[in-house]
Length: 494
Ligand code: GLU
Image 1 (spheres, protein in one colour):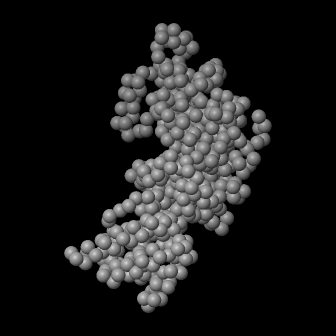
Image 2 (cartoon, protein in one colour):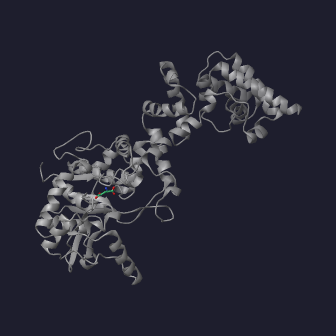
Image 3 (cartoon, protein in one colour):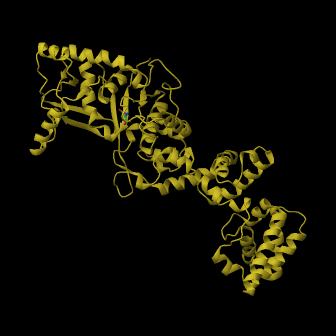
């Protein structure tokens, strides 16, 4: 392992799926590694079985892959620092726990949960924050040995200096100063012997050669504890950078009530990975000239971690939606059509079997081409396409009042007979036909088109009408016109 190269990590705890906050942490580590020609390590922090959620590792990995955030070492790819699951590194941690105990930098604590709770109650009453009163810090060697031999349950605590300050130069926040008297002799190994997060993280960040620790702001209180551990163990301390919180539009903490949170949810709603990545990039960093649409390749070229914002980033789903629309229309048609396929299948408009036919795939691609200009997500492509696959008996109410008037229906009848007589059924010929009809009737083209549009789709807003006719084909076009004429006449009689 070359120590001069940048080595960063994404270290999720598998407690659920990958949410926007985690995805952003992962993205910025990825950007930093890629822009510096360094390495991204994926490490799974699964030391706490109580919080572990079955299937979570798979979900996180799937989401990272979907977003195109690849890692150089970790699950699936291996690497020189294996294993990359903390649950498989217990023996490694034991060795360093022992080192701290032997050097008198950590100690056994025999306080029971009840005793600790009693202490907590006293301090609560005095309106003081809880701080472990260091009851076991200075027990004699003999007493410790005796109590261990007697089988008394014990944890291991880290000895914090009782005075002084710790200064940290955070890459994003600048200088931070921590008063050590405010810190506890925190637990580094629980009663059951498993190391705590703060301990395992330090051992792994050292053994995995991390040069930078770039993570969420909520970890700031852990940073001084970890730095003290690095120092106590004689390890080189990496650089730290803490990314600002992602806030809801009302600047409150982001939560479920603010809508989709996880990468999988966005995927299911029909967002594109490029758009989500682009959006997450803007949550905390600004490209040159405040450009809003920027590919990840371009971001890698421009990326400068020193320009990351320390202010809370406001989560704005409308902006993500807009960005998605931009990508939906600029990415190659084949790609968007392919991505749209499962959404069409899920809506029950087509089947996997139907997709086996090349002609059908071509049809779908043509449809997506015509529809995508007006919508912003893959799901919206499907929602805007149902009438191409399904017949309907209802028409948009407002549209009926406006366009299925006696004149509108009379106009539709003329259109119907001319379309029936039309040989060439392509966009250009149909456009010429409707232009001629408008001239003959001495009315605007739009007026001639509207009743036909409503007849063919049941809607007043659709893609271009001639595109729509070609996609429906002559037979269906005529059948729908017939149905609308009958419907309109029924209204007149009523
Ligand atoms: N496992 C921690 C979490 O999921 C991250 C720890 C770290 O980045 O230091 O929040």
